[in-house]
Image (cartoon, one colour):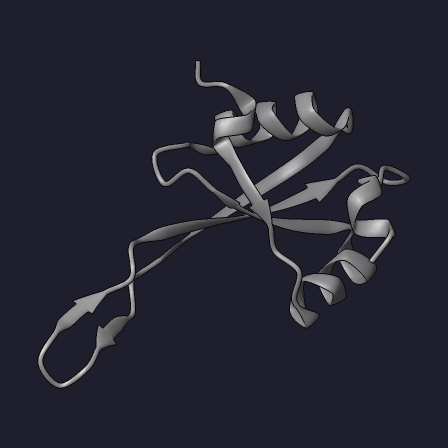
Length: 96
């Protein structure tokens, strides 16, 4: 099993993620692309001491980037949307 701090890379703070937090008690994170839903659930429960009901994952493809001469693309990322139990909150998302 991987270290929880290496599975959860960073929170996602956007208008849509704040809407999901208020409406469905869901929070969003960028996670390690190799992590599965069980690893993500365990990592969130361990790091934030909350009860996780459901995990949805989305693989975000890299976008093409570059100028006229150099071409490339951003790396593949994975997003996890985690639904928390009723009454559970993560303090980080409450201060924003």
